[in-house]
Image (cartoon, rainbow, N blue to C red; front, side):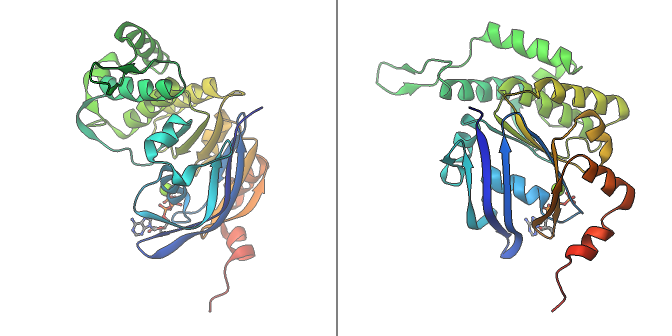
Length: 269
Ligand SMILES: Nc1ncnc2c1ncn2[C@@H]1O[C@H](COP(=O)(O)OP(=O)(O)OP(=O)(O)O)[C@@H](O)[C@H]1O
Ligand SMILES: [Mg+2]
């Protein structure tokens, strides 16, 4: 049975300000959902809240991944259970190379899936086994080739000095290596040149299939020309006000958000 990610009545505030005002969304493995909405409507807030970012206060609601309560899990456990988040503004980790970062992230996820053994040291402490170097190197080399990322990036510190488009490609590299059940991609298309957009979209498309459920946050139809969503949702002032098929994204492209605002704007009190 496909797993599902279920968000129920999620209310989130930031710095004491309510931003998400009751989000309901269900994503099954194999489904592609697009989330659109004007600037400041709360799209990134949703991804940060799903990651468990401490600044994002959960006021109400529930999130279940395959029936398990996500909100009570630490961030690393969320990743181990198959949730992947790519952020609008990826963080830099100086001193940690992309290759080392990926090897430890992939190893952690595979250990949790039982695909890597956990060894006990002589003192009885759990030793965290890493994926064997040869195997890892083979996988990362092939995946970087597919995504047309220069091999020299593997030795660079994560995201340090990477251009906007390079960061986005590297996120898809992470996605491809981690093979999560659910991926939340926050404006993965922003800042990409025309070739990079195609490469990144093809990279995502390759991963799309019965095992991946995705929430693709984007402002533009052009990404959705490559990645065809099954469902499109519009977020306005912290609520999903419209859900439909791909035609909804075309309607936004043609008409903008004014009609959505006119239909749903909260009365000024
Ligand atoms: N750390 C923060 N401190 C104060 N306000 C915040 C913080 N994070 C988010 N907000 C506010 O929450 C609202 C929603 O922001 P969010 O980043 O989720 O919007 P978005 O839909 O992703 O917009 P965009 O399309 O511009 O990326 C905004 O008004 C923003 O200013
Ligand atoms: Mg955003």
